[in-house]
Image (tube, rainbow, N blue to C red; front, side, top):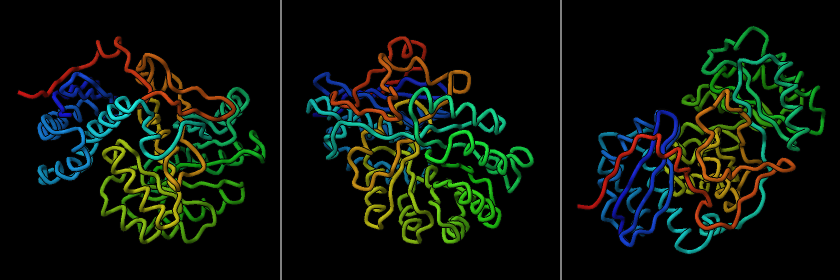
Length: 367
């Protein structure tokens, strides 16, 4: 079945792709969040022209061919655009088979344990602790991630002493039975990260994400080698050769590819398989409530080295207002700290017509 049309609907924050086959059947996917209006242009200039007229079954070949055709433009934007093609075709495949994508990947419908993921740094330790405790009581989470350091902070905290204050404050508020994870977002040098890491270990934190600038893998490896907790990373990385090196040198204990930054499900499966061969768990990055979290849910139910958790954003409309009103029916319901992958065909979700009507539209179709 050939691809006859590729449509995109986007704004600056998020964008969706609809693939239409020659018989009129469709599937929904997503280009990456953030600057999605730019990625939309890349999609129609550098991805869609190579895909329209090709067979749906050619997806895996196309994911290799497109970067070669566009070899002068390697990088993140091309792969963020390719993700829209990949994820839309997976939805189409699922709908044609009458199965959820996870089943096509070798998994099954069912539940996933989530960690409640906070994006906030402009919040005091006491306020964050109270907020997380309230979410534990309301939704039953038993794992939480919060922010330390300053994003790309060069050893400068969001404000002096915040990192040292927030970790024990959250532990006191949530008790000893809750798993704690922290994210430094490339904030520390290796020496400072090791110092902070010992404090994290003393407070029972089990996950230290992106402690050093992510592009300096040797620095991250120093932290991994010095600590007993899990050092994690990889969300920004899209290049397969970079991933091979990262895994071979064991720069991290847990790999965290982002499906939309990577270029879709197929390329993320490749990274997950490399991690599995090296004995490394895979806990993908999915820090908002667009389709990326749904894609990650289907993936985690299928891969053999799925990590302990699904990342689940807890930010309300005042922080990420753009992620609301996207879907006809909200696919994200938390119960007892878990989310469910249903057995609905494809991704099991439809984009809301009201949202589409307000987006910027582009189309590439067969002549």
